[in-house]
Length: 74
Image 1 (tube, rainbow, N blue to C red):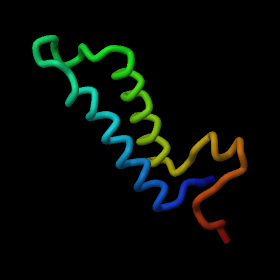
Image 2 (image 1 turned 180 degrees about the horizontal axis):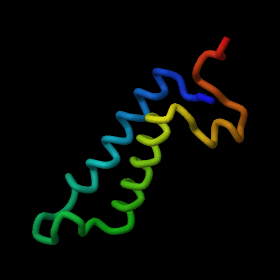
Image 3 (image 1 turned 180 degrees about the vertical axis):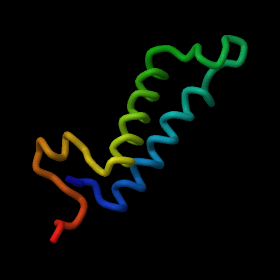
Image 4 (image 1 turned 135 degrees about the vertical axis):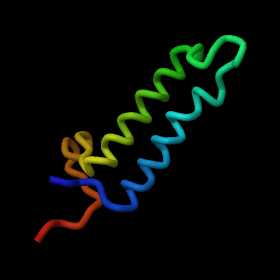
């Protein structure tokens, strides 16, 4: 049961990729690529969630609140 529309899916995918890349782009090379702290891990987790919801076209929060950004199936 899809509840994420095409535009929503595209925006989620773009935001997910950006959130996954930011911790690595902001990391200090002297400390290593994975030394970016709690905020970096939060960004990675949010990026993964956005990419997964975009891939499956399903958002559990949309279901809880009764939202949908895709047209109803006929």
